[in-house]
Image 1: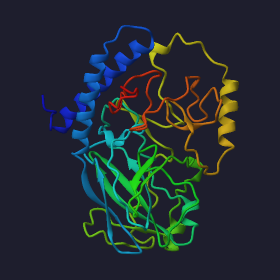
Image 2 (image 1 turned 180 degrees about the vertical axis):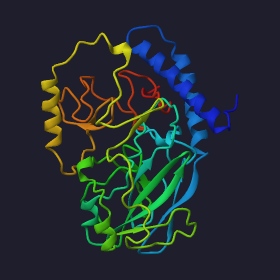
Image 3 (image 1 turned 45 degrees about the vertical axis):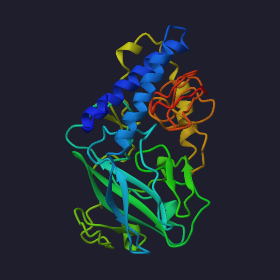
Length: 351
Protein backbone atom coordinates (compact mmCIF):
# COMPACT_ATOMS: atom_id res chain seq x y z
CA UNK A 1 0.00 0.00 0.00
CA UNK A 2 1.42 3.38 -1.01
CA UNK A 3 1.74 5.96 1.80
CA UNK A 4 -0.92 8.69 2.01
CA UNK A 5 -0.10 12.02 0.41
CA UNK A 6 -2.53 14.10 2.47
CA UNK A 7 -0.54 15.74 5.28
CA UNK A 8 -3.06 15.00 8.02
CA UNK A 9 -3.44 11.35 7.00
CA UNK A 10 0.33 11.02 6.66
CA UNK A 11 0.90 12.30 10.20
CA UNK A 12 -1.81 10.06 11.64
CA UNK A 13 -0.20 7.05 9.97
CA UNK A 14 3.21 8.07 11.38
CA UNK A 15 1.86 8.44 14.90
CA UNK A 16 0.09 5.07 14.65
CA UNK A 17 3.29 3.36 13.48
CA UNK A 18 5.27 5.03 16.27
CA UNK A 19 2.79 3.82 18.86
CA UNK A 20 2.87 0.31 17.45
CA UNK A 21 6.67 0.16 17.59
CA UNK A 22 6.70 1.61 21.11
CA UNK A 23 4.21 -1.01 22.33
CA UNK A 24 6.13 -3.91 20.78
CA UNK A 25 9.48 -2.59 21.99
CA UNK A 26 8.11 -2.19 25.51
CA UNK A 27 6.84 -5.75 25.52
CA UNK A 28 10.22 -7.00 24.34
CA UNK A 29 12.15 -4.93 26.90
CA UNK A 30 9.95 -6.12 29.78
CA UNK A 31 10.09 -9.80 28.89
CA UNK A 32 6.76 -9.97 27.10
CA UNK A 33 6.03 -11.66 23.79
CA UNK A 34 6.65 -9.58 20.67
CA UNK A 35 7.02 -10.58 17.05
CA UNK A 36 10.26 -9.30 15.49
CA UNK A 37 8.63 -9.52 12.08
CA UNK A 38 5.88 -7.12 13.19
CA UNK A 39 8.44 -4.67 14.55
CA UNK A 40 10.47 -4.85 11.34
CA UNK A 41 7.35 -4.32 9.23
CA UNK A 42 6.21 -1.32 11.26
CA UNK A 43 9.72 0.16 11.24
CA UNK A 44 9.96 -0.14 7.47
CA UNK A 45 6.51 1.41 7.15
CA UNK A 46 7.48 4.26 9.49
CA UNK A 47 10.68 4.96 7.57
CA UNK A 48 8.71 5.20 4.33
CA UNK A 49 6.10 7.47 5.92
CA UNK A 50 8.77 9.79 7.29
CA UNK A 51 10.39 10.03 3.87
CA UNK A 52 6.95 10.96 2.56
CA UNK A 53 6.56 13.66 5.21
CA UNK A 54 10.03 15.05 4.56
CA UNK A 55 9.16 15.42 0.88
CA UNK A 56 6.23 17.70 1.83
CA UNK A 57 8.50 20.32 3.42
CA UNK A 58 8.55 23.48 1.34
CA UNK A 59 11.32 26.03 0.99
CA UNK A 60 10.17 29.41 2.28
CA UNK A 61 11.94 32.79 2.36
CA UNK A 62 13.00 33.37 5.96
CA UNK A 63 15.58 36.13 6.05
CA UNK A 64 18.18 38.14 4.14
CA UNK A 65 21.90 38.32 4.87
CA UNK A 66 22.87 41.90 5.78
CA UNK A 67 26.39 41.36 4.42
CA UNK A 68 25.82 39.69 1.04
CA UNK A 69 22.29 40.94 0.46
CA UNK A 70 21.22 37.44 -0.53
CA UNK A 71 17.86 36.02 0.65
CA UNK A 72 17.97 32.92 2.84
CA UNK A 73 15.39 30.15 2.46
CA UNK A 74 14.70 27.11 4.64
CA UNK A 75 12.61 23.98 4.08
CA UNK A 76 10.06 24.17 6.86
CA UNK A 77 6.62 22.94 7.91
CA UNK A 78 4.46 26.06 8.15
CA UNK A 79 1.14 24.19 8.08
CA UNK A 80 1.08 23.77 11.86
CA UNK A 81 2.98 22.63 14.93
CA UNK A 82 1.70 19.06 14.59
CA UNK A 83 4.24 18.34 11.84
CA UNK A 84 7.37 16.37 12.72
CA UNK A 85 9.55 19.35 11.77
CA UNK A 86 8.50 20.64 15.21
CA UNK A 87 9.26 17.43 17.14
CA UNK A 88 11.85 18.78 19.58
CA UNK A 89 13.47 15.43 20.43
CA UNK A 90 13.44 13.84 16.95
CA UNK A 91 12.80 16.56 14.35
CA UNK A 92 12.30 15.49 10.74
CA UNK A 93 14.14 18.11 8.71
CA UNK A 94 16.30 18.44 5.62
CA UNK A 95 20.02 19.11 6.08
CA UNK A 96 20.47 22.00 3.65
CA UNK A 97 23.59 23.84 2.59
CA UNK A 98 23.86 27.20 4.33
CA UNK A 99 25.82 30.24 3.12
CA UNK A 100 29.23 30.96 4.63
CA UNK A 101 27.76 33.96 6.48
CA UNK A 102 25.03 31.93 8.22
CA UNK A 103 25.40 31.41 11.99
CA UNK A 104 22.09 30.23 13.47
CA UNK A 105 18.29 30.27 13.27
CA UNK A 106 16.32 30.76 16.48
CA UNK A 107 12.75 31.95 17.00
CA UNK A 108 9.71 32.74 19.11
CA UNK A 109 6.03 31.91 18.72
CA UNK A 110 2.78 33.68 19.55
CA UNK A 111 0.35 30.80 20.08
CA UNK A 112 -3.01 31.03 18.29
CA UNK A 113 -6.42 30.75 19.94
CA UNK A 114 -6.18 26.95 19.89
CA UNK A 115 -3.26 24.54 19.60
CA UNK A 116 -3.00 21.26 17.73
CA UNK A 117 -3.13 17.88 19.48
CA UNK A 118 0.00 15.85 18.75
CA UNK A 119 1.92 13.13 20.67
CA UNK A 120 5.36 14.71 20.90
CA UNK A 121 7.07 17.61 22.67
CA UNK A 122 7.23 20.89 20.75
CA UNK A 123 9.43 23.75 22.02
CA UNK A 124 9.03 26.70 19.61
CA UNK A 125 10.69 29.25 21.91
CA UNK A 126 9.03 31.90 24.10
CA UNK A 127 6.14 34.05 22.91
CA UNK A 128 8.24 37.23 22.86
CA UNK A 129 11.16 37.67 20.40
CA UNK A 130 14.60 37.79 21.98
CA UNK A 131 18.27 38.03 21.07
CA UNK A 132 21.41 36.30 22.34
CA UNK A 133 23.78 39.06 23.50
CA UNK A 134 26.79 36.75 23.63
CA UNK A 135 26.47 36.32 19.85
CA UNK A 136 25.84 39.98 19.09
CA UNK A 137 28.90 40.97 21.13
CA UNK A 138 31.08 39.15 18.60
CA UNK A 139 32.41 41.66 16.04
CA UNK A 140 30.73 41.27 12.67
CA UNK A 141 27.66 39.29 13.80
CA UNK A 142 24.20 40.70 13.07
CA UNK A 143 20.70 39.32 13.64
CA UNK A 144 17.56 39.76 11.54
CA UNK A 145 13.95 39.52 12.76
CA UNK A 146 11.26 38.31 10.36
CA UNK A 147 7.66 37.11 10.57
CA UNK A 148 6.78 33.49 9.74
CA UNK A 149 3.16 32.32 9.87
CA UNK A 150 2.87 28.72 11.11
CA UNK A 151 -0.69 27.59 10.62
CA UNK A 152 -2.82 29.47 13.14
CA UNK A 153 0.27 30.70 15.02
CA UNK A 154 2.57 33.70 14.52
CA UNK A 155 6.27 32.95 14.54
CA UNK A 156 9.22 35.30 14.59
CA UNK A 157 12.45 34.00 13.09
CA UNK A 158 15.68 35.39 14.54
CA UNK A 159 18.49 34.63 12.08
CA UNK A 160 22.15 35.35 12.83
CA UNK A 161 24.74 36.12 10.16
CA UNK A 162 28.46 36.86 10.40
CA UNK A 163 30.58 39.09 8.17
CA UNK A 164 33.60 36.87 8.84
CA UNK A 165 33.91 33.18 9.75
CA UNK A 166 33.14 32.88 13.47
CA UNK A 167 33.61 29.95 15.84
CA UNK A 168 34.52 29.09 19.42
CA UNK A 169 31.12 29.79 20.98
CA UNK A 170 28.03 27.71 21.85
CA UNK A 171 25.84 27.42 18.77
CA UNK A 172 22.12 27.67 19.64
CA UNK A 173 20.03 24.78 18.38
CA UNK A 174 17.84 25.45 15.37
CA UNK A 175 14.43 26.94 16.05
CA UNK A 176 12.18 24.32 17.65
CA UNK A 177 14.85 21.60 17.70
CA UNK A 178 17.21 20.07 20.26
CA UNK A 179 20.08 20.22 17.76
CA UNK A 180 21.57 21.68 14.57
CA UNK A 181 22.04 19.61 11.43
CA UNK A 182 23.09 21.41 8.25
CA UNK A 183 25.55 21.35 5.38
CA UNK A 184 28.30 23.93 5.73
CA UNK A 185 29.22 26.10 2.77
CA UNK A 186 32.19 23.76 2.28
CA UNK A 187 29.80 20.83 1.90
CA UNK A 188 30.56 19.07 5.19
CA UNK A 189 27.74 17.90 7.48
CA UNK A 190 27.61 19.90 10.72
CA UNK A 191 25.80 18.58 13.80
CA UNK A 192 25.78 20.40 17.15
CA UNK A 193 23.84 20.12 20.37
CA UNK A 194 25.14 22.97 22.53
CA UNK A 195 23.04 24.18 25.45
CA UNK A 196 22.19 27.88 25.72
CA UNK A 197 20.21 28.61 28.93
CA UNK A 198 17.22 30.93 29.05
CA UNK A 199 19.26 33.26 31.25
CA UNK A 200 21.21 34.14 28.09
CA UNK A 201 18.07 35.56 26.39
CA UNK A 202 17.53 39.33 26.20
CA UNK A 203 13.99 40.49 25.44
CA UNK A 204 14.88 44.20 25.37
CA UNK A 205 15.49 44.61 21.64
CA UNK A 206 15.82 48.40 21.60
CA UNK A 207 19.57 48.73 22.32
CA UNK A 208 20.41 46.27 19.53
CA UNK A 209 18.05 47.97 17.09
CA UNK A 210 19.52 51.37 17.94
CA UNK A 211 23.13 50.38 17.32
CA UNK A 212 22.38 48.39 14.15
CA UNK A 213 23.32 44.94 15.43
CA UNK A 214 19.67 43.90 15.04
CA UNK A 215 17.75 44.46 11.79
CA UNK A 216 14.21 43.56 10.84
CA UNK A 217 11.95 42.67 7.93
CA UNK A 218 8.37 43.92 7.93
CA UNK A 219 5.66 41.22 8.18
CA UNK A 220 4.33 40.11 4.78
CA UNK A 221 7.20 41.86 2.97
CA UNK A 222 7.82 39.45 0.10
CA UNK A 223 10.90 41.46 -0.94
CA UNK A 224 12.58 40.82 2.45
CA UNK A 225 13.72 44.43 2.69
CA UNK A 226 16.13 44.91 5.60
CA UNK A 227 15.13 47.76 7.90
CA UNK A 228 16.88 49.32 10.88
CA UNK A 229 16.00 51.34 13.96
CA UNK A 230 13.14 51.29 16.44
CA UNK A 231 10.70 53.48 14.50
CA UNK A 232 7.78 51.41 13.21
CA UNK A 233 9.47 48.15 14.27
CA UNK A 234 6.61 45.66 14.90
CA UNK A 235 8.73 43.34 17.04
CA UNK A 236 9.33 45.70 19.97
CA UNK A 237 7.46 45.43 23.30
CA UNK A 238 5.24 42.56 22.21
CA UNK A 239 3.05 40.98 24.90
CA UNK A 240 3.43 37.34 25.88
CA UNK A 241 5.31 34.86 28.01
CA UNK A 242 9.07 35.29 28.34
CA UNK A 243 9.77 31.66 29.09
CA UNK A 244 10.21 28.71 26.74
CA UNK A 245 6.91 27.18 25.70
CA UNK A 246 6.27 23.45 25.95
CA UNK A 247 3.45 22.18 23.72
CA UNK A 248 2.03 18.66 23.52
CA UNK A 249 -1.36 16.90 23.44
CA UNK A 250 -3.18 20.18 22.89
CA UNK A 251 -1.65 21.79 26.00
CA UNK A 252 0.74 24.73 26.35
CA UNK A 253 2.85 25.37 29.44
CA UNK A 254 6.16 26.77 30.70
CA UNK A 255 8.54 25.72 33.46
CA UNK A 256 6.75 28.23 35.72
CA UNK A 257 3.32 26.64 35.18
CA UNK A 258 3.84 22.91 34.45
CA UNK A 259 0.76 20.80 33.71
CA UNK A 260 -0.75 18.77 36.57
CA UNK A 261 0.46 15.22 37.07
CA UNK A 262 -1.80 12.76 35.17
CA UNK A 263 -4.13 10.63 37.32
CA UNK A 264 -2.29 7.47 36.31
CA UNK A 265 0.67 8.71 38.38
CA UNK A 266 -1.47 9.41 41.45
CA UNK A 267 -0.09 6.35 43.25
CA UNK A 268 3.50 7.65 43.10
CA UNK A 269 4.64 8.69 46.63
CA UNK A 270 5.13 12.39 47.28
CA UNK A 271 8.76 13.50 47.16
CA UNK A 272 10.72 15.68 49.56
CA UNK A 273 10.60 19.07 47.85
CA UNK A 274 13.64 20.27 49.76
CA UNK A 275 15.60 18.05 47.37
CA UNK A 276 13.71 19.54 44.45
CA UNK A 277 14.54 23.10 45.50
CA UNK A 278 18.19 22.19 45.99
CA UNK A 279 18.28 20.92 42.41
CA UNK A 280 16.53 24.05 41.14
CA UNK A 281 18.99 26.32 42.93
CA UNK A 282 21.91 24.32 41.54
CA UNK A 283 20.54 24.65 37.99
CA UNK A 284 19.87 28.37 38.41
CA UNK A 285 23.46 28.98 39.53
CA UNK A 286 24.72 27.95 36.10
CA UNK A 287 23.85 30.90 33.85
CA UNK A 288 26.65 30.95 31.27
CA UNK A 289 26.15 29.25 27.90
CA UNK A 290 28.14 26.02 27.90
CA UNK A 291 28.77 23.38 25.31
CA UNK A 292 27.00 20.12 26.11
CA UNK A 293 26.99 17.67 23.23
CA UNK A 294 26.30 14.86 25.70
CA UNK A 295 23.98 16.75 28.01
CA UNK A 296 21.39 14.75 29.92
CA UNK A 297 17.90 16.14 29.44
CA UNK A 298 14.70 15.97 31.47
CA UNK A 299 12.26 13.40 29.98
CA UNK A 300 9.32 15.63 30.97
CA UNK A 301 10.24 19.12 29.73
CA UNK A 302 13.35 18.47 27.63
CA UNK A 303 15.61 20.94 29.48
CA UNK A 304 19.24 20.14 30.28
CA UNK A 305 19.88 18.81 33.80
CA UNK A 306 23.01 18.30 35.86
CA UNK A 307 24.63 14.87 35.71
CA UNK A 308 23.41 12.77 38.64
CA UNK A 309 20.44 15.04 39.38
CA UNK A 310 17.35 13.38 40.84
CA UNK A 311 14.98 16.20 39.95
CA UNK A 312 14.75 18.61 37.02
CA UNK A 313 15.77 22.14 37.94
CA UNK A 314 13.32 23.54 35.38
CA UNK A 315 10.03 21.68 35.94
CA UNK A 316 10.81 20.02 39.31
CA UNK A 317 9.86 16.49 38.22
CA UNK A 318 11.61 13.27 39.20
CA UNK A 319 14.13 12.25 36.52
CA UNK A 320 15.57 9.07 38.01
CA UNK A 321 15.25 7.18 34.73
CA UNK A 322 17.77 4.98 32.93
CA UNK A 323 20.46 6.69 30.88
CA UNK A 324 19.32 7.94 27.48
CA UNK A 325 19.49 5.53 24.58
CA UNK A 326 19.59 7.70 21.48
CA UNK A 327 18.91 6.70 17.88
CA UNK A 328 22.02 7.33 15.74
CA UNK A 329 19.82 8.21 12.76
CA UNK A 330 17.46 10.85 14.19
CA UNK A 331 18.76 11.44 17.73
CA UNK A 332 15.42 10.57 19.35
CA UNK A 333 15.17 8.68 22.64
CA UNK A 334 14.45 4.97 22.38
CA UNK A 335 13.64 2.34 24.98
CA UNK A 336 16.53 0.29 26.40
CA UNK A 337 17.24 -2.79 24.26
CA UNK A 338 14.85 -1.55 21.56
CA UNK A 339 15.48 -3.14 18.18
CA UNK A 340 14.03 -0.25 16.18
CA UNK A 341 13.69 3.49 16.76
CA UNK A 342 10.11 4.45 17.48
CA UNK A 343 10.66 7.90 15.98
CA UNK A 344 12.10 7.12 12.55
CA UNK A 345 12.08 3.31 12.23
CA UNK A 346 15.89 2.99 12.17
CA UNK A 347 17.13 -0.50 13.10
CA UNK A 348 19.03 -0.23 16.40
CA UNK A 349 20.49 -3.72 16.20
CA UNK A 350 22.64 -5.07 13.42
CA UNK A 351 20.82 -7.74 11.35
